[in-house]
Amino acid sequence: RKEVEQDPGPFNVPEGATVAFNCTYSNSASQSFFWYRQDCRKEPKLLMSVYSSGNEDGRFTAQLNRASQYISLLIRDSKLSDSATYLCVVNQAGTALIFGKGTTLSVSS
Amino acid sequence: NAGVTQTPKFQVLKTGQSMTLQCAQDMNHNSMYWYRQDPGMGLRLIYYSASEGTTDKGEVPNGYNVSRLNKREFSLRLESAAPSQTSVYFCASSDDPSTDTQYFGPGTRLTVL
Image (cartoon, rainbow over all chains, first blue to last red; front, side, top):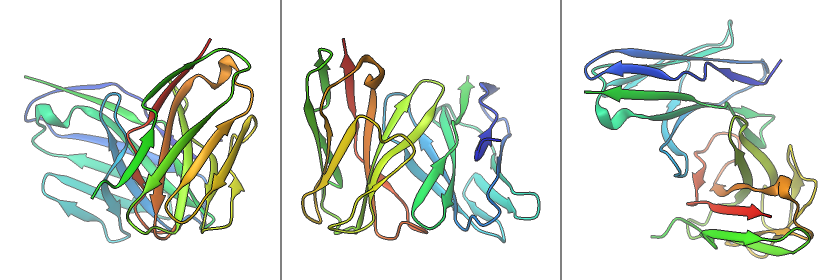
């Protein structure tokens, strides 16, 4: 079983749509969780950290379910500029982060 | 504030040639990392340095060596390049490897012929 698994997509949605990405992780001892965004041929950048209580940043909502070892990202009112690859990231044994392979989102007008 | 910088941006090597990828950060971070990213494989950790003076292997260290020259700089060396090392290489840094955001450089696109 891979350590961090994501549906690769692509997710093709119209502007204004709501889209949700899911991620599962295998190490129950993982402590920190993140969503990163990567634009084509660019470096990954932090989108948001994921907290146990769930957290929201504008149109983006992240949730964590430790019992199910599951992380989600919800994007409301999608914009063209949201088109990118979204990486689910989990810490590993306090020394390094483990990256999922990413979910590709394409928002069209 | 430049963040994380990497040189070169692009490089083409012949099989067997050597080269060093340079990385520097100006955020006074303790930890630095080298990743490679291949299509369909995601980001894979090559080596990391949790603090100045220490380095450790990541998931895919074979064929690479690293040097943490000082707190700012972390270099990646390919002693004898192979076509399997064709990839995009990213350097990153963070203050706390467990909880803190990793900041990435713009990447080096390496092709080995």
